Image (cartoon, rainbow, N blue to C red; front, side, top):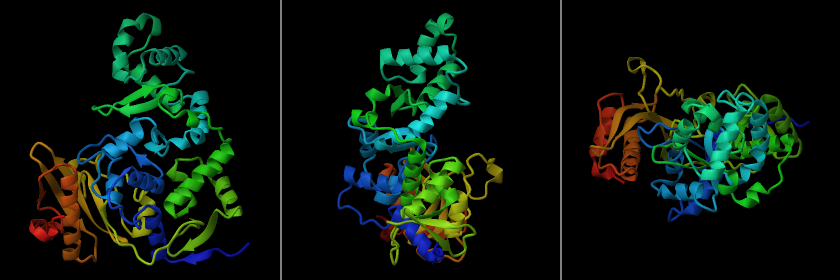
Length: 406
């Protein structure tokens, strides 16, 4: 067996950024093709309910495409023929519809073993009755079924929480699919055959080993170069099948083992990964962006220690409530705590911090352009910098400078 190739830390960063889409040439006009290309890079778009700025699944596309029409994502995920569908792929996430057969082994596991959120094994009457009700009524939320629950309590024996738990179980088990999210961000459930293209439903199901190889292959394509732990995390796989899949993909030439400067663990590079000579990019990153969602990997790649502090008491927060890293070229150079104050039309920068050793004026100028772009995209009129953080004074000046406006 040949010795693993050595890879510099800088080359690894450029490889990862290219795999994630930050080296792609922008399309002249952002279209469905632009969205498809971006999703082909990220693999999935994590969904999260926090809406202090913009919901999590919209932001990675903005980071790669710039201001875009969010209806592009809605059409891809909610209208026939759907190209994206929600499933527990990383956590709750939009994934390409063609991954549905690959996830069947995961769905079967939930069908057979249940889940902490409920399952047929514990209350088969609840799950079966709900499935029959969705079949009869069509696309519904858990809230829609609450009146039916009340009308039929003697027969079905459920209450609101049982309804929601059972619907989530049916979703995880693949017996229901998510047709869309409504205005209250609630899942709207329906039968898979009324959500997914028939070609997807009729596609052969890979066996668990084939499914594991496909998920690791996709994870490797999206990460460019990654450790086994990172490949496992991308689609939240078990360790044993991930390890086996990695070994098999190394054997068939899809992956090659490399040693990355400064990384304690072996890494694997996808054979199709590219390493540009340089990356020219500027982007604000969601806390749930796949570039930074695995915090240990983020620190390994960028030397950037990142923790989301939403659940930390306000007086104990270090950087803020909803903090976005700022990518500039090949480095994460700053972080900003953002809030969309929609009633007043303001994008509030509650705090702004530069990373140690970064040129504050240059970082502020680049970040100001990103903030104005975010403001315009989210239909906010102004950007207001609050005086917290070492970057705040320079950023306030850059935001006021007309040259900083996109």
